Length: 88
Image 1 (cartoon, rainbow, N blue to C red):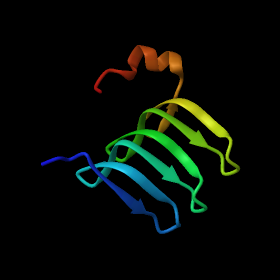
Image 2: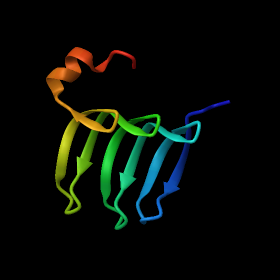
Image 3: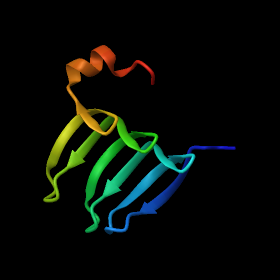
Image 4: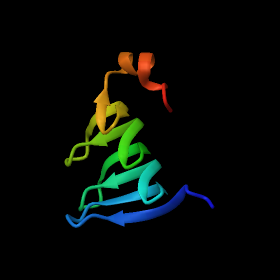
């Protein structure tokens, strides 16, 4: 079967995720939206967490962080270049 299913997940707080899933978790590329429909995070996911290249946005619409993520945390780009591709 194809585990890179596409779909939409609605959170109880009104936010939603639209993108790829693997075994029921956010995995691949996807966009997380604020409940007003503006993007909150657009990028790569791994096993339910932000992981890879991605952009997070402020509620007001501006970019909050554009770069690399690991285990849902922002990663300094220099560290990513050293360690980021291990285990991918």
